[in-house]
Each structure stands twice: as structure tokens, then as C-alpha cells.
Image (cartoon, rainbow, N blue to C red; front, side):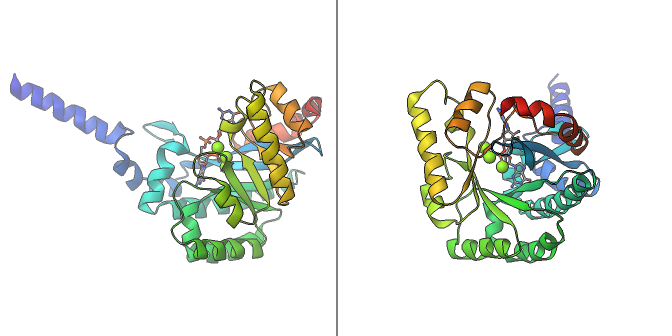
Length: 281
Ligand code: C2E
Ligand code: MG
Ligand code: MG
Ligand code: MG
């Protein structure tokens, strides 16, 4: 009986080594291969421009179509990719893909600003900046790096130098998740960016809470006085949309406008839904 239990345990263990999300090391060992095999994909979520009343910008959000585990969201593998250094290969790939996709959109008649998410980790990697200087000038439109701060930046001086190199290569800088844990005022003080994205946690109770509304309005005013464009993320309700428009917010992103989707779906969206989006304006 004991032997059978042990055998069963081994069998379960083997299955989990292949299929269990907790087994992150096995996930990471497959990441480079997944990139090569085309199992990693960029989905795109539209950003609605409140003044121009249309979608002229999108954000690329990475997805991993894992053959066993199904579609993996970035929260499951980005932190691990940062720890193992795989984030570099992943971001290189995202940058190349974004440039290719932006060209495809342009060829279909859509001039679209394309953002990718760039981990704070890469602000310590001068070789990534070398690549950006080669690739960014090849883009046919505006590229944006949303700086996602998932780890404390270890060398602020180096980070600022690298950010300057991105900007000199023509890339706009967006401060992502502003108002969430790590992305704070200290951050805003140091980074001279082009855009500030208000985190979903700040806008989720916007229409319910007078206090939250005051915080969001003050954040928009602060960003504007620093010369930053403001994008509110995670908007699901029409009331929040209207309120943010009244507060002078520049762009709205969220399920209300559109979910992250494949390039093909995004192109259909850009073609078909432009007119319908006008109802928001
Ligand atoms: P983020 O850049 O702040 O992206 C917004 C996240 O909120 C996305 O989740 C998006 O699907 C989700 N979202 C958008 N609109 C709504 C909404 O109306 N309601 C709700 N409930 N959620 C909404 P996703 O795609 O799972 O990405 C999670 C995070 O992973 C991103 O947060 C970003 O920090 C990171 N990430 C994604 N792709 C990359 C990448 O290529 N590199 C790096 N370093 N990080 C990435
Ligand atoms: Mg982002
Ligand atoms: Mg964000
Ligand atoms: Mg966020």
C-alpha cells in the first residue's frame, strides 16, 4: 500500500512539473523557446483620445500561449522573467514586434502610436538602450515605453541616463500605474516623461467617492502642470468616462473602450468601431 501511495505521489509530481503554474522554473526554462516558436504574442488595448474623439494609440500587452497551460497572463511570468533576466529577451521581442505591427497598421491606413511595457529592470541595462537606438528610428510612427516599476531602481543615475537615451532615440516615456504602490511622487519628481497613466486602483471608485474624485482631479492637474499627457486606465463605466472627460483627462483606456486583443481584432476594431466610439464624445 505504501509503495502504491509513493508511486502515485511520484506520478502526480511528474504531471505537476509539466503543468503546474507554481513550477515557475520550468516555465522560465521554456520562455526563450516560446519566443522562438511564436508562442508569445502581443495583444493590443486601445487608448481613446478624448479631444480627437478616436483611437490613435494602443498599448501592447504580452501573452504567452502555453501549449499545456493555456493562455498565460503577464502577471504570472513577468516577475519571474525579471528575476531570471529573461525580461531582456522578452522586451527585445516586444519592441521588434511592436514596430512590425505598427507598420501593418499604417499599411491598413491607421496611424497609431504604439506603447510597450518596459520593466524598471531594463533601466539598468545599457545594452537594451543600444538596441533601442538601432530599432526605434526604424519605426514608422511614435513609440512609447510605459515604464512599469515592479522593482526598486537600483541605480537612479544610470536609469536617468538610459531614459535620456530612449528619448533621444525618439521614444516617448510614460509613467505607468501612477498611484499604485511603487509608482509614487518621488518617481514623478525624477522622471521627465511625456505621459502619466493613472492606475486603475485610483479610478475604480471615482464615481462613488468624492474623495477619490478629488485625488484623481488633482493628479490630472499636477500631471498637466508638469507637461504630461494623462491616460486613465481600467475604465469600465460610462459615468467614469464622462467624469474624466470633464476633469480634462486626455486619454481613456479600459474594457469600456476595448479589451487587449490580437492585432487582427484590433485592426477590425479600428476599421469598424471608429464611428461607434464617437458616441462617447
Ligand atoms: P499595465 O501595463 O498597467 O496594463 C493594464 C492591465 O490592466 C492589463 O492586464 C489589462 O488587461 C488590464 N486592464 C485593462 N483595462 C482594464 C479594465 O477596464 N478592467 C480591468 N479589470 N482590467 C483592465 P495584463 O494584460 O494582464 O497586464 C498586466 C501587467 O503586466 C501590465 O499592467 C504590465 O505591467 C505587465 N506587462 C504586460 N506586458 C508586459 C511586457 O511586455 N513587459 C513588461 N515588463 N510588463 C508587461
Ligand atoms: Mg502599461
Ligand atoms: Mg498600467
Ligand atoms: Mg495598472
